[in-house]
Length: 57
Image 1 (cartoon, rainbow, N blue to C red):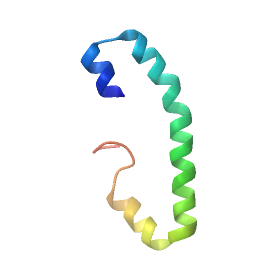
Image 2: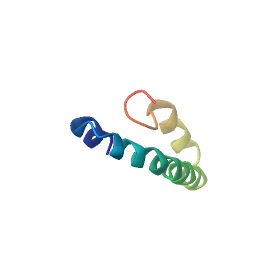
Image 3: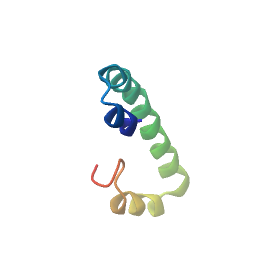
């Protein structure tokens, strides 16, 4: 969705995107906790190697 905001240079879409990101971050954190409980140390090693968001976050 961020790509659409940049491509259209739309301030309106940016204002919609910001509140959308907060609940999505909570969902992602919850999924990570589920995977940690399910897969344990294997998933923890995966988290060390792979960024959560994009290529640098």
